[in-house]
Image (cartoon, rainbow, N blue to C red; front, side, top):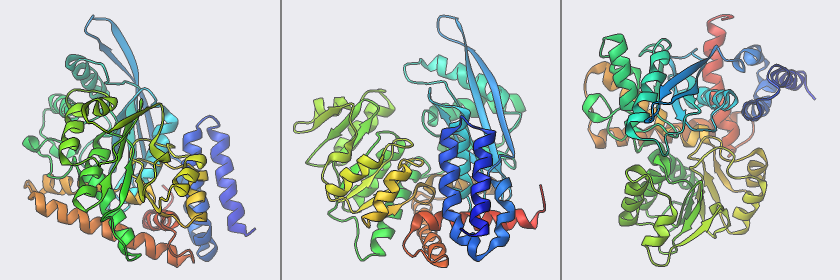
Amino acid sequence: MSTTDNYVDEVYQEVLRRDPDQTEFHQAVYEVLQSLKPLLRLEPQYADVLNRIVEPERAIVFRVPWADDDNAIRVNRGFRVQFNGAIGPYKGGLRFHESVTLSIMKFLAFEQIFKNSLSIGGGKGGSDFDPKGRSEGEVMRFCQSFMTELSHHIGANTDIPAGDIGVGGREIGYLFGQFRRLKKTYEAGVLTGKALSYGGSEIRPEATGYGCAYFAQEMLEHHGDSLKDKRVLISGAGNVAQFCVEKVNQLGGKCVTMSDSGGYIYDENGIDAEKLAFVMDLKNNQRGRIYEYAERYKGAKYYKDERPWNVPADFAFPCATQNEIDGEDAKHLVANGVRGVCEGANMPSTPDAIAIYHQNEVLFGPAKAANAGGVATSALEMSQNSLRMSWSRDDVDQRLRHIMVDIFNNAAKAAERVGSPGNLAVGANIAGFLKVADAMLAQGVV
């Protein structure tokens, strides 16, 4: 084992020692550090930043008190992890879900460093508050309380949150309104994912799903193929999944599954535009469950408490949540003919699953590259806010497509640089790391 390999392992062991209970964060750090070993053997000077890049610059934890509709006082915990700002203001979504912990926030913020490496820094935040089942008034009061503390730590040139699981246009609106009220200024660039009426961008809601499909298309075209006529599995039924289905349909594929935390639906005939419109209304407006799709459409089946990775298909887009495909799921995908996996969620494949993809030559688009369309379009929204102008839908969509092609090419070139051609997981980590590490080395020990 080389000296740099030993040092990488020492850095990881120090992460384990400092935060022994943060298993999700450990997973993210381990995956990145292992992929950097071939780079550090060739260019050992970059080892100087490792013990800094795995430690957040700032982690803020705060109390969020609010009153429910019965006037009972509730208390949730809020988080904002400002992980690395070497190349720009911190940028990353807010997640409102009962599963949110500091470990998950650090894991997501660490991933965001490399995903954001085009031009901005990495951060993430959220709360263990779950908006499901809450009234409009309760969601508004929670968002106002959350922003009352968060407002001290964010700004258009400091930290720019966006949406994530549990935080859509409604929540962003309440958060922005409270920020404006507290700061007594109209700072449009402080949040992204805003409605068009107050500084949002065209394509921003669609961006992560569209970008993931564009990345998959580019990955396939690089191998002389495309999404046309492909049977596609998609997990999730939220924003990313919805617009991934829409763009895959436009590119000629046929999506046959969607899911939520209760199970998944399988529609052999495909989820066309009319059926997708039903899902969008069901999930975005009615706050319903995906099993209602099977009740509505003849021939569709619902599988309770299962994930869609047993269904025969050509391509898979995990768009639900982290670690939703484990080693056994990956074996099922391979056995059922899946030749490509493109991640719409944040790190939805476990290390065991990724190893099985590579062993079986499954094309793999890792999350920090494939789902970067959301943050890329957030950066476009920030640019429009700075210029006080709005670009057309077609203009933003074209810019997004070009960005996803550039991300693919950068990852592919970085993989070749370290002798791992075609390994986009390694390439995406190295491409992002190099951009951030060069900035950190130039700025001294800070």
